[in-house]
Length: 319
Length: 320
Image (cartoon, rainbow over all chains, first blue to last red):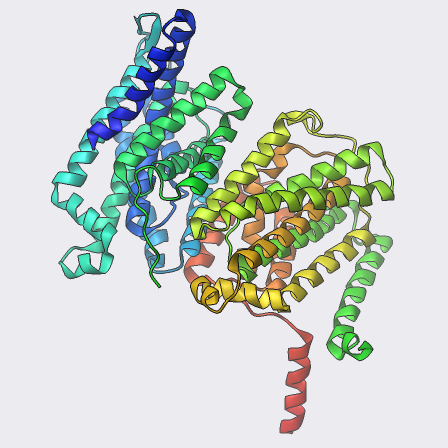
């Protein structure tokens, strides 16, 4: 699984490297964009993981997921600005807050609809998303907030002309650590096995003595933890947050999950990174106005060509 | 033949429409409805067209579309562009026509690949298309980018708006009762079963989608020629959700429900105008609450019809 996940960006890198060896300057710029794309993509990947896990287990597009990511950023903002906590403490608080919130939302809004039609659940998720977005706007105000300066220092590393900032290194490390932890939990622990079992067949899992409710809550917890972390990272990276910031990244992360094959965890990682890179390259070489369009074009193309996604399996519909 | 068209219930409907029209016109002329209320009224009428046309796609055909604002956007921009160079009623008609043509082509292009998808995938794909339309509008010269078009002559008059609204409600209702409409309903109830019965599901889904999109473009044209200014910001995902809320609130599949919901939400919007974010929170709570406690909406798939009313009377008479 890990080999697959790490292969995609590396492969891209090498391809381009051999193609463009002559043009050194263009090459450096390209690699720089690739690094930027990877850091953006890591954030998408973190959000996409939550989408894909929740979809895998209860077939719900959790529209509110993007807003949980937004709340992660806000919690970290208040923790660092008003309580002067350091970055890592703020990160942990935001993650815990988001995780608990995710479970809470699942219990209140989604649990009564567990066996309703998918569209019903989807509309509910949109309602929850509205409540979170505009609730935050109501209480925190709609103005753009900025994180305190110098939270991480202004360290910039340079390798062969490619600049990597401290924030980017932080994004890479935290993403990798979280993804490793997630992979461990899903593949090696009892709860992870329960998650996989429920996603394959809920009833059979229940008959085997798995508490389905608890497993679903746990899935929401994990997904929301990751979204919270992504929110904090994006807050530090772009240094500005607002209550509606979750909408577009949420959609893009969902598209990333679809791209990689929804329900497949490595797929979400690959999808997130690819979408991030594609978007950054469009900004760098095309027009930033089209950066959102490219993502939707990717979505529609993948839905037409391979609806199951890159790593997804085709499931025949049973009558 | 004539008798069929002028049946008792049809006469009742015509009387209702004419009555409502006269009453509201009178109220406007007398001054009970000031210009502030008139804006609400116009909005409600446009929203009725939008809600009813989305209900055709979601309620009657069971295809979950989140891209209605995109088609509205096409209608609004084509009407605005034509009318700006030809500011009379003929230009308006031409603008609506151009909007209809473009939106039907766009709907065809959208529907052929995406309607193969089901449920939530379709929702996301239509959302993506609507965003692409918006981004295209945002980047074109003829649409003046993010600043939008201003100085659109006000050509949407009250009688025209009312007539077009009634016509769209009639189109959607009759579509629902036609052969195609029944095929669509069977697709909604069970796609595989209806396919097994020999119904060309793709064709009927596409028909419903295209008709809905065209009506939305008419609503967009009316909107553009009523409010002087249009911007790409007006046609975001949120606009699609606004329309969706009306359909869900009224009951997916119930045209009467959509109309009632559009009126109710229109009034609610005006009442809550000064609390914009509170309004959105209320929207959210309403959506969640309806889905949990009454997923079928206000009316479910029930319709208010005069024939039912008349029949009930007849039955009561017979009982006596």
